[in-house]
Image (cartoon, rainbow, N blue to C red; front, side):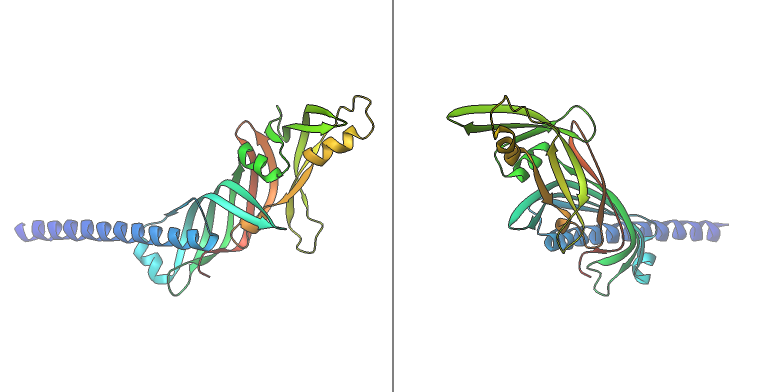
Length: 238
């Protein structure tokens, strides 16, 4: 009986040690992978990684992870000489095959969301306008001030923000902002002058992990929300 009790104690201790080592290993792997992602994406912000599944060590030995969650903040995409900032990305990568160096991998599938705040969308316009929530999903308010025929005019217009197919050879999607209507006040050329400030297209998919695609867009008080998904998505270092 005493020997059996001893075996139980040993088993409990070994089990606790295994759990402790496993949790230390997953924490180390999460931090290392976060640094690889941050370096690969050229982030000015942060990257956080959470690896799901227990035990982690058996997954690592087989180079197969069930699920990896990734949160990125401060991502900059550059296209046509313009930089566009994504405020935050939250993505889940499923069935991740790790590379030999454990510095990244490729997910069989992934999905997530991206947020572009109105401050970042305002910066992306690069035309001196200010963008805020437009009061309904898919709508933004654009405030533009311009000099026209010696007068300083400030106008608020409601615009539709949408995800549309890019027309260049790169393909993919672009975020498009178009004023629904512009008050002309009877002045010739006023509408076209305001639209030069309020209407714009911006490509942002070049800042995403390779394989993730933009599939949908809406807006609310927090900003513009984008839906992401893809297959064979690269998660750093692959």
